[in-house]
Image (cartoon, rainbow, N blue to C red; front, top):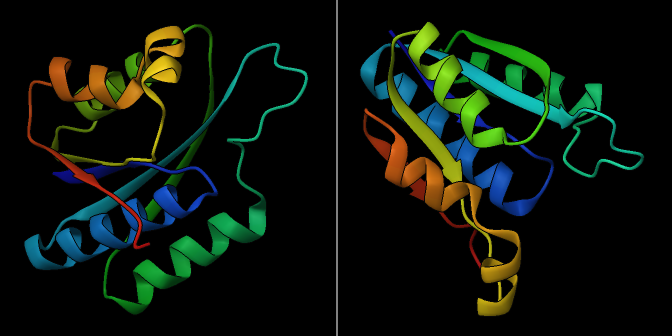
Length: 131
């Protein structure tokens, strides 16, 4: 079994990776770090640099956790990719980071986090970055 974490290079993404690494160490499981770009996007701020991903893997190793990075692309929705990978890897837990959004922003853009929380068929740990 493994723990799946959706990672973006933001404070919320860093908080998610820290929490996922701690859970993986506690449970004695591997960590699957997912970073995905939207297909056809001209500018994609969610794509992590290689240095960021290398650092995440090194931090996991320092905590005694084997980590693997999955870099992919998604068409319409990152939610489906996270849930599919969690199924493929028989994940015991999905970890996501939450960020502040306005009510209007949630209404117009929807919420990937909300959809993961509602649609996942396994436990989800949602974390916020410290203020």
